[in-house]
Image 1 (tube, helix red, strand yellow):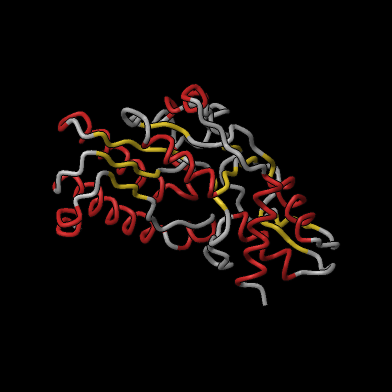
Image 2 (cartoon, helix red, strand yellow):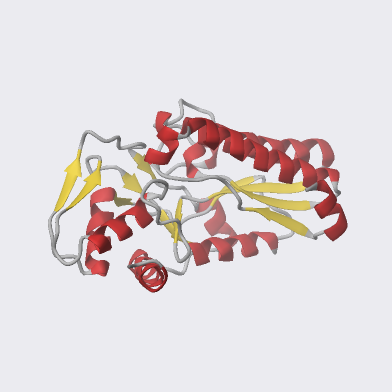
Length: 261
């Protein structure tokens, strides 16, 4: 990685690579989630510094915040309380990457910053039932239950989550890179959340599923709520463009054309 960066000499690096997944994947592969992500971050962030790259933007995650952080979650909530146990290894890895960027910024004056997006979804997502996030998992589940077989979702349906369409993530990254300097850490999102039950109903409507929705309360809910305080980013002049309904429609359209059997 150091040789690649030294040869290419990029003006900036955007580190979006990571091992990611939903609650089931995090619970079954905790060592992989911390080990692989620490390795990626050490290789790319430290390698960028050693290769003289002055600007780097690292994608963290809303999962880094305490389980019972105030809602909406401000950046200042970081490390103020215990993490959500179902994704703590992943969160610790992301916190390490954020801290490495901040430390290089402080000691060497590097323009390295971290953005914390919420649940990101869109075309090209991971729809594997064993490793996908909630949006992709629901799209696949409702599609495979067409036209009217019952669908059972994990948990109680009461937790609230925020979702950001992939094109909006890219737009926010470009917007921040165009600023005079990167913020050390900043939330990126819509600032609005929906219950998992509300999400299931929205996905069901887009897919055209006519069956019943059940809830397996023996499965974990994870965070009670994750809604981002995006006031700092809004103050800079950025806002997302894609509504939840539009994003689900575009994602389902991609799934039908590329993966649906």
